[in-house]
Amino acid sequence: MADRIVITGAGGMVGRFLAGQAASQGRDVLAYTSSEWDITGPAPGELAAGDVVVNCAAFTQVDLAEGEAERAHAVNATGAGNVAAACARVGASLIHISTDYVFGAAGAHVPYDIDDATGPLSVYGRTKLAGEHAVLAALPTAYVVRTSWVYEGADGGDFVAAMRRTAAGSDTVDVVADQIGSPTYVGDLCAALLQIAEGGVRGPILHAANAGAASRFDQAQAIFAEVGADPARVRPVGSDRHPRPAPRPSYSALSAAGSTRAGLTPLQGWREALATAVRPLPSTR
Image (cartoon, rainbow, N blue to C red; front, side, top):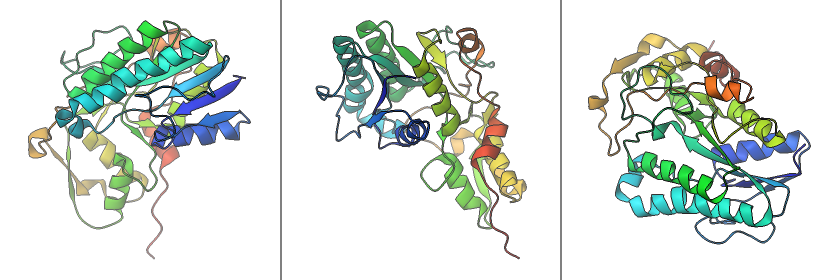
């Protein structure tokens, strides 16, 4: 078992879930919220040799980043490099979380593997790609773990939680059908991160996402079906019906093939993961 799991960005969804999952396995966990460790500045003094740091801290507001590129770069690129440099100084290991949004410009129609050419479309994607480079420049032994469309599924701000709330009513909902990714349950992602922390997985780039590809429309229909609502209440529309400041990839699904060869256990399919995360709505009878 890893000596100690140190988590940055522990106030976010992945950080919170990872801290709880690691602690439930009896691991020694040190969790820093972004206010406790602002990765754009120096690292706290508690970091030590043998620690496995998981960098969950990120500027993830994709649309806001378009107008705040400097702030997004400070966290996603410079900050990520700062964490890697701090790990290098004390002899700690690092697992850095990245995103499927480093892809998208090539117009792919099959899941991206770990060594496929990147091509981000947005400020968020470009700063996250710069963060990958900064991490590996400062600490070549680090792991960069790309994931996709992460959700918890309970009350909160993620897509699955929002669709569950809509499903509980009676309204129809328009959902884009021309953006395709790999919806990923946070519990499965965290299990993969903890496997990497144990050692035995080769890096430096890995993909950890639930298997398969789905559009947001596909995902929304599956959520409705899973909670016992009528999937026909979900209507497909194009992205032009919901214009956003930041361009999204039309296709950014991730392949596990290269990561499996590197020793990482493949994550279950996205539809099976959704069933794990989502419970049916209470009966109204």
